[in-house]
Length: 242
Length: 242
Image 1 (cartoon, rainbow over the protein chains, first blue to last red):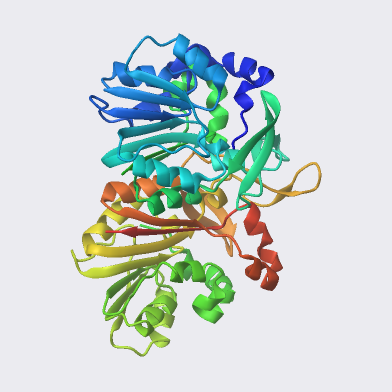
Image 2: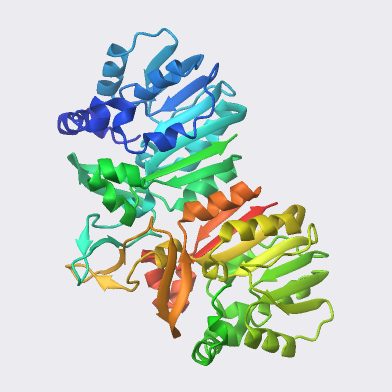
């Protein structure tokens, strides 16, 4: 059973105030990188694992998906997703990704945005996703980058010359991390980048593309605060094929 | 043209005194991880890119390889490799991996140990290696891990509580790094882990296994000094299939 931090009042209020919650996909720095990996969604049966407010589900439909199943552990989020969606081809449901079983060979595309780092048993999850996809399907997801996740005390520091550094430690020590982000005691699970890749390969996926998101020069011109992403990545994107 | 730091007297003397230079493969912490990825070398035509003193070439032959071509930029290393090898099925040669062209479809296995981080044009190299291998061949290599490579000032530091941290910065800023290791002014090329993976995929390789080397409990019992590898990896291993 995953922690359902999104349904605590403090976290949900904080999350709802984020740019990506208000503006949707365009408000997420990493969205252009995700979009570039989507291939053609036309006619596809799409599943979105950790669908939040349904922004991706609605995007997939506007891009021609035949149907979208959006699943999330948060009742608050699913309630708002339903309220914000008028489309009979989109179905939302409550699900814990730690235990979810999808029907076999029922989807042509799987997506997840920043949800899997809350999951302890990633191997089980990707094996289940592999079963749920038909051969030739694509699986595109983002997670918090392991360099971002690993430290016992995540947060910027400075070296002796006053330059910004990310104090990394415990990179090989996988497992539970408890941090304070929007609320106290948010539980996440750190895995090395290699562990994520190897779990996909073991489940039968072929790796198509890996991206440790960093801003472009144009991004930096519009968002100078993203410069710290050049020092330490926050987002990891993986695209794989069944 | 790559820098040939191995043929400077200071670097060569320092490198020759390292445990891996004296004891060979068994003196390298990451060797068991490499060996686990070798599959069956029996009857294979093997190429070793950056062969050094020829330890891997001789291992491959003892594991049944039909022939081994060992290439290195260092005249000192090739001279010692030849002196240490009595085996007509092993050929050594001087080559700059930045410019090397191997004959098409002439090898069944490619190996490289800790050489590619000296190479600026990794995409050219892996495309050439792909051409040189027959379909079904395996390509196993190690490089310095990008977390190890990235910082402007690589070296351990401590946080406010005195705990060991690796001060990471510039992870997304790929390219030349000049460090002092065994000699001053050693030139290396930093690439993100994703860039290494994507170059292999673009060249036509399938990713089989990625390993960010860390010591086991048994390793730590024998080498307590390896504990720092739990905080920050030094070695990256990739196994791919043509």
